[in-house]
Length: 295
Figure 1 (cartoon, rainbow, N blue to C red):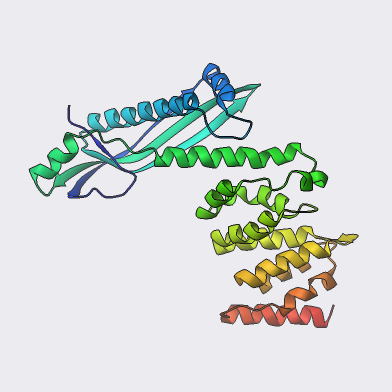
Figure 2: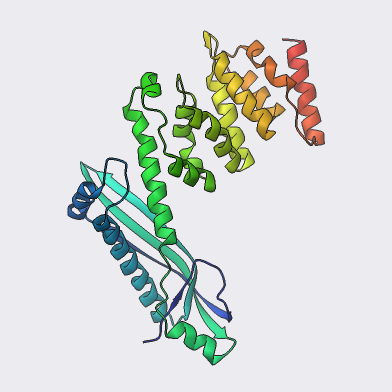
């Protein structure tokens, strides 16, 4: 049986897409019994996956890939390009299930030569485990971060550093805004670890600029309770703004216009600068300065 090419890229080497057959997708779920085995398969609460656990996920991934291949074949396609793999937990009523979803575009291909076509037809061409391993690692770290909700943040210094060096390396290798809230909790802890203090600004730098500004200025606003201004928190995030060139007059004005804000606490932000100013930035700066000149 002719193999279907499955790839996460939008093109296929030595081949040309001649016709798009449409999107195809599949989802497979591992039930509650298998999940129970998963729980006992962890080497520790947040440790690595056991061989049994890994084999279960590999089997789930392989079956989903085969279903995608079958659907593509029924459409008369030669390949599925732009494949995306998503792995998530479905939980409710005390039960958990794991689901893997794969989506891609089925296409007809024309190869440069018969030899190139035979190369793909005669090999086992499933997407490698890189995408699956990424999703598993991302989910494991997110679970660990979400566990912060169950802990008393006043004692966070007792169990920092919370993420291992290996986990931090993963976090800093990608742009993962879904980690922002919990990593901010670590950074804002009474006594954050040196590792957290070093890596949190680096994490912010991995994000899109607007996303980074949302997080940084959101944390500054949360520190401006008129009855209890967190000066140290403002200093920390001022440092990040300076380090990453995230100064934004419009966002500062927005914070000032919020109810119950101590405007004097924002004065240190006026000393910050940015590399390039557009005309709109200059207008915002004039408005901001006028607010401080006429409080």
